[in-house]
Length: 109
Image 1 (cartoon, helix red, strand yellow):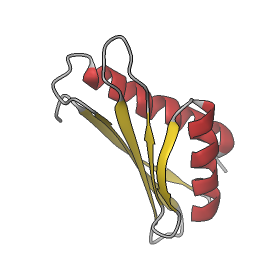
Image 2 (cartoon, rainbow, N blue to C red; image 1 turned 90 degrees about the vertical axis):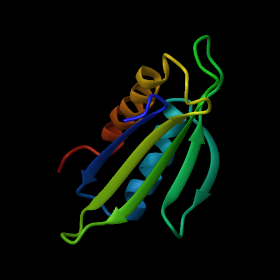
Image 3 (cartoon, rainbow, N blue to C red; image 1 turned 45 degrees about the vertical axis):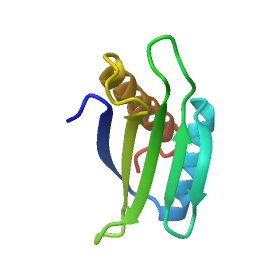
Image 4 (cartoon, rainbow, N blue to C red; image 1 turned 30 degrees about the vertical axis):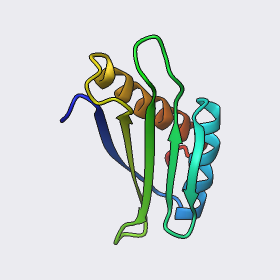
């Protein structure tokens, strides 16, 4: 894993469109700024602002339908400047905050 990246995969027992809607709401809740969205391809890009320790990060969310009908979600956070010392912890924090908010909107069933 590079300093400037953190990536995790998750599975939700919800329709892909419901998960995409929840991703949008969860990102707004954790104050990620929407940069682009391709609803047909189920890909969304968000960004964070510059902080005391980083030049900001990009958060990419990609969804797909799994063979069992569940929805797979890949969340990757990448630093705008890959050599930042604090990048790994910031990127991990971005992913975990988004997942925690997403779990609020999509409780296990």
